[in-house]
Length: 257
Image (cartoon, rainbow, N blue to C red; front, top):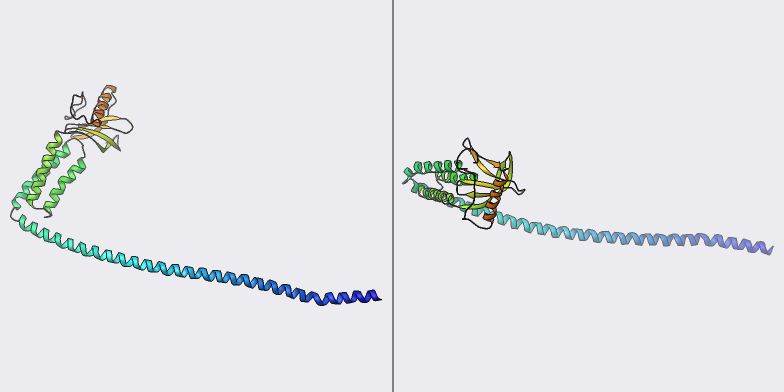
């Protein structure tokens, strides 16, 4: 009987204590969760604040840059307007001076056209660049950008350059068209009479005139290849004068002899 009472008392005690213990554990878990949530909220709030500060700083920086760019643009626009005014004044002055010497224009244009034809018919050495320089004189003269006296001086200098080029030998680089393909090559110019080329891959050849036009021909003869190699080697060593065996009468139409 006593054992039964003791057992009953223990069961009642356990029954009374268990809900209280469960509630206490639930409260502890809830508090811990709330603390974690609060920590996360504070962390997110801090990140948002940092992002806002960074955004405000970026906007201020962009605003300063915008102001600086606008100031630069305004300065450039002002400078361009000033240059435009100066150009107009210069053109008016040139036009007034040119009116006194307009009789020179036909003679200068004729001389420019003749020089352009000479360049077009000569060996294919930087032809496009040289012709552009000549045509620029004519364009500037016709647009009253230069006076007839200035055009005459430029034309004379171009003739002088042509004469100097006819007596100079040199090693240069330019684009050539070989077998329908454009290739960058080293070229040796012998005055305005002969032009030889050498490709990075070792092929060599020369410029040949046929039917009034020049084209590039690859040399296949071993002896003549050696002659061209010797010529290029001498030019690279800055040997501008000396005796070289060249078997190409390239100033005339027809094949090499």
